[in-house]
Image (cartoon, rainbow, N blue to C red; front, side):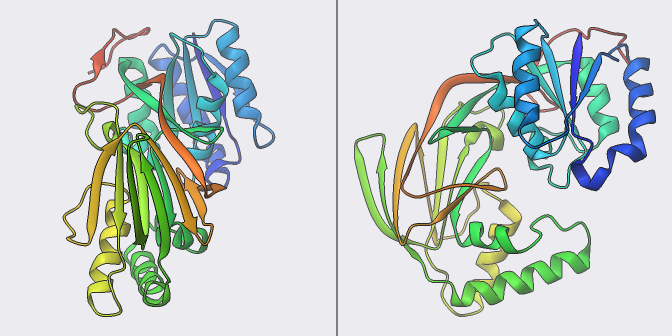
Length: 299
């Protein structure tokens, strides 16, 4: 049975506008399942843990990135559990990276149940899936809407980012890679992601992206635009260095906030590692492992 963990507060209460249509569509597809609503932060993790213990094999997060991260942290070492997402949050980066862009599409994907395994990343004691950032990008995320939905919002975002970037002081970082290679550099921004989120056919590996300061000229605008556009994806900026790893230890001067999947989670120094824990996500990505739907198939 499908078990839906619903955050009614996600997306400023977006659920109340679509819940009747959503439930009707899920029932139509034969995957109505059981619904559980959260009432406070952190409750989704407890619900996921309890659902897995009861033997539920498909757990669906209905909400945004925060809800998804709570669910995967709550699953612990549970095996043979597939995780789905119905994106109804204010921030839906994770679902977007999995190829899920609307609740209507999510319903069809849940019925088709194509599974792709992703290794979790551990940052200190917290598990996450997609992207960790520090430096300028993190400071920007804390102050402005980094996912505007219209042209005016994007223009305002870029203006704010450009202004702040010109005065931003780089961090001095010491980075140990796989307990073998030491790097010391001044960095404007740094991100760590599972490269499989960037390319579903790739192996589960950490891809570390470091950028030095773009300077105080027009080049800053281009560099900042790339940061906002790529959000951790591999671009072609000559001011950027990238490498693969399984474990990274970061120290910075001064200490810096760290953002995990769009939410401030910790500070440096911190150790980040790719774990052996894998979450099987129901996705749209090419290269997924196909499994027959539990309910009726739709074309």
